[in-house]
Image (cartoon, rainbow, N blue to C red):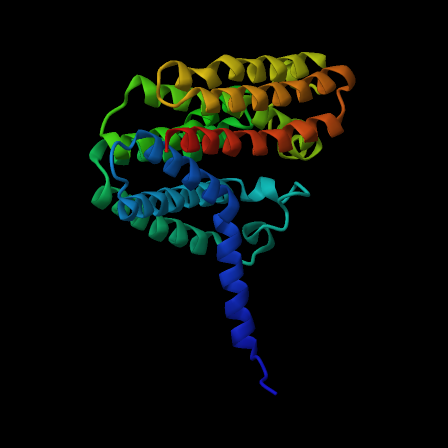
Length: 295
């Protein structure tokens, strides 16, 4: 029987901690949106090797931003039940190790984009990282303005992908940026509603309309979700995709909007949770529908 030594266990624990620090699923979703923008903007034959490098670079830069966020919020994460077991609050990784990790994967990510894309894509990715890590993160303890600021880097991935494919920012690029930008508001606020108790412990102030779990906040969530209906039709209107995706996106938008009425009715955590999961489902379905309609 083979015995696993303490050193092996320690190494595996470190690897697992570095993996957790990267928040793989969130970084993957960012990379997916980046790839979506690239495929939507690409004309002619798709260069899949170029596509792979773009997605990898976007994934690593997203991971870098997330790690910086966790370094900044280490002490606050200790106060919240949902974050207290992360690698930094538990001491499984030191701040120095996290900083070194962020520098390494950040340099690799920016290096890949510089090598494989264009200057504008690299500049936009730098802006995205700065806004998320050094503006949005500290603003979370200031007020709901943080959601507006955070929605910008949150919506930049598809724009980055488009710019990587075309080399320019066009009205089509701004449309896909706008859809993801508006989507951030019901998404962020639903999460803030569900995690309100934890967020208050850390001093995070993300809910609108006085920061309360009430009808006013629910109405704000409903209004921004409503905006997604006309925005979702713009790609079809401008000929970027066909009418089929427009129909699918409208159906998804109506179903997403319907969830907000339940929240307006009962102001419950359960209804907010449904909106949160609905936002997770809405965006990838919409993006896949656009891609299938174009390809």
